[in-house]
Length: 439
Image (cartoon, rainbow, N blue to C red; front, side, top):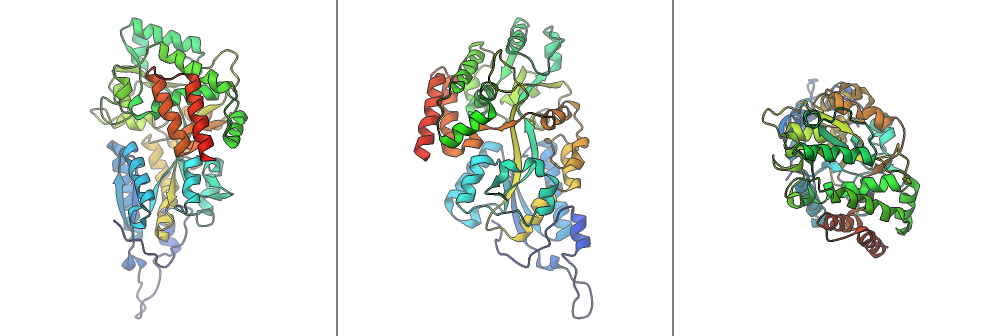
C-alpha cells in the first residue's frame, strides 16, 4: 500500500499537468543556484477505478504515467471489475485503517457519499478544486453535502436501452422511436421473439441492473419532488411506488430476458449481460452511458460495436412523472481524508481538458468538462448529450440516492421480484422498513 504522509502542499490545479509544470510545483533553486525539483521528494498515491478492460484501462494507465512524468508523483493504479471495486472499497472504509483506503477513488454521490462524509472518510474539495468545480458546476449537486463539494464528477449520463440495430432490422423493426411508449416497446419484444432473437439481457445476478427497471418505472410514475419528499420523510406510502412495481412486473411478465438471467453478471465477460449484447446474442440491454466502453472491452477486436443504438425507457399512458425526466447519474473522483495533497492535484488533472477529451474520444462515458463534450467518437453516445443537457430532471440511481442500507434492501427485494418471489407491495415494504430502521 502506498505511503500516506503529507508533504508540502502542491499548488491546486484547475487545468492540466502543463499548468503544474509552468505553475511551479517543481520550481526552486539549490545552493548553487541550479534548478531543483520537488520530484526529488516524489510522493506516491493510490488510484482505484473500474475501467478494467480494453482501451479504457490502457488509457487510464497512460494518464497515470503522464502525471508521474510531469510531477514525479508515483500513481499506483488498481483497475477492478465494478462490483469487486465496491466490495473492496467498503471493506477498506470499514477497516478504519488509512493505509487500506485509496487516495483517489470513484464516488457515485448521493446517500453513499453523505455516509462517507459523516464518517470523516472523504476530503472537502470545495477550496482546493475551486477552478475545476467552477468548470463542471452543472453536475456537482449530487456530490455536494452541506454546501461542500466532496467529489468531482467526470461522467454524467443516462440509463436507456442500448440495442443492436442489425438484429432489430432483421426482425422487421425499421422505425425505432427515441422515446417509445410501452405499447411500442412491447411491439419490439414481440417482433424480436418472432424472429427467434432473445430481446433482452439483464445482469440480475448483480441485482442493480434488474433494479434499474423499477427505478425507471418510479421516474415515469412519481414526479421528482414526490420521490425526494419520500426520501426526506422516510414515507413511501404514495401509490406511485406501487404503480412502478406493477409496470416492472408487466415487463418481466413478457419473459424477454436471456436464459439464466437471475445469475447473469452485469459486465464481466462475454456471457455477462453486456457481453451478450456486445457479441450479438441478444438485441437489447437496459444500461447506462458506460455501455459502449464496456461493450468495446468485451468484443474480440476490442472495438465498440458499430451496431449499437439507443432509446429511452418507455413511457406509460397517464403516467405521473414528467416524460422528459430520466434516470441516471454518474461517476466522480473523491479524495480520501488521509490522502496527500498530491491526490487532489491528480483528481483535478483527471478533469482537465486533455484527460476529459481523451476520455470522450474513447467513448468511456459522457464527459462533464464542456471542452470535451464535442470529442465523443460514437455518434450514438453523442446523442445522449442533448438529452442530458436539454431539460428534464435526472433522478439519481435510487440505490445510490438512498444509501447502502436502504438501497441494498430495495435491490434485494427487486431481485426477488425478477425471480417471481416478491410483488410491488413487497418492494415498497422493504424500503419503508429499511428507511425507518435508519431513522
